[in-house]
Length: 134
Image 1 (spheres, rainbow, N blue to C red):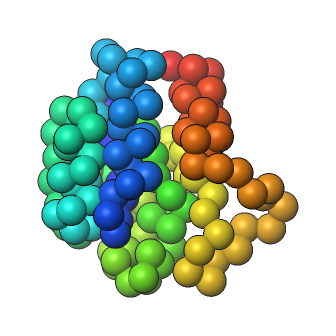
Image 2 (image 1 turned 60 degrees about the horizontal axis):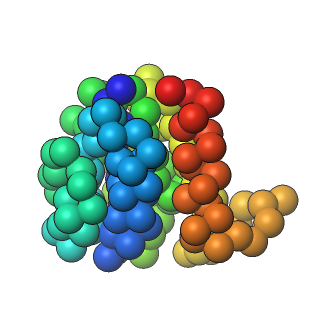
């Protein structure tokens, strides 16, 4: 399974995701794409197999992925303080890959009905979902 991890800003969530998924599913191939070099670098340090940065890397990665994982903002144009371009959001939304989108109530995007959870609890939920999928 080819997993595409997308993150922005400092890549903290992406770093935790890559580390958690690699620990639980070491056979998976993870491509980390950051909207900036810091996000990419942090995901690569966590164990991603491949890494790239920027809009075109998101677009190409979405075409090749079996599964896309990241904060919900990766599917919303201009989110994450403007780091997600309309083309990036469209690539995520139009991809045939399955998507695990993590609810983050930030940047004026409020997901109604989602209870507040710690980052570690959200990582655990991602791993639970992956166990069902893999």
